[in-house]
Amino acid sequence: MQVEEELARLSPGKETLLTIGVFDGVHLGHKGLLSRLTEMAKREGLLSGVVTFHPHPREVLSASSKFVYLTTIAEKVGLLRAEGVEAVITLSFTPELGQLSARSFVTLLQKHLRMRGMVVGPDFALGKDREGDVDILGSLGRELGFSVTVIPEVTTNGDVISSTIIRNALTDGNIKQVTKLLDRFYSIKGRVTTGAGRGAGLGFPTANLAVDLKKALPPEGVYVTWAYLDSQPYQSMTNIGRRLTFGEKELTIEVLLMDYQDNLYDRELRVDIVERLRDEKRFDTVDELKEQIAADVEQGRAILSSHDRE
Image (tube, rainbow, N blue to C red):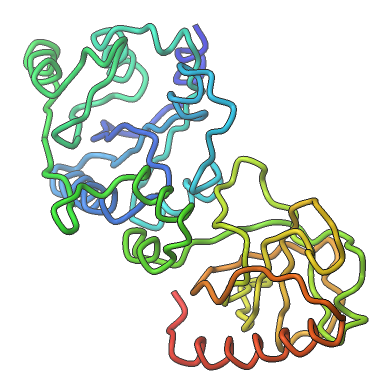
């Protein structure tokens, strides 16, 4: 069984207090639960841990080929650790894992991760057909010897904060809502690849960013951003679009670092999206495009001067 093989590779140094879930985005709602997890683990002398899954169960069980993620695996692990989680265990979600009963799964966690307790939200469930809700888990815990602590969900305007709500806000281009619910700017990260080279000819050299194809993106348009190169921040503008002025159809992500002139080819960039500036436009002449880019840069600088980096 693949899940048992993956768990067997791990050997926590002490007993654990775990939470379980996909945790895509590691958003404000997740942070409330993680805070309680790490606080309780420290108080009880346990190792705090997150058991997470990839791919998303919905992608596997519904065979959806269009599922996109707010965070890559590496981003998610980094964000979870930044919240103070001591151990992050990523399990491959397979149809076989989806068929495990709640009892079988928690037994595996006790056997391989030395689980002494679980911290979950009120709507949490695991196991085949989500049979293991908090009531069933409570019964299993009393029988098998682990605690189950239920943490209230974090809400905003009466709505529970969820990864789905954030993905929808991102799709709608509601960057302010995304920032609020994530409690940080939304980031995209990738390696700089060769492009058409038109940016330099326009007087505004840009970096073509290759990102994970499963990464969720905001709608096409021009965005005010912070770009990070080796952790050094640069004011930047990012165009997500199809170079309408030049009649191209392939979606590209082009980043204009305002105060950086050296070659960026094959370097890795992280881009934090601060604000949506405008839709992508088709210009009749290159001179009109240059004038618009200059205006975008000026407006972008003004916006970034009023935002703290996150």
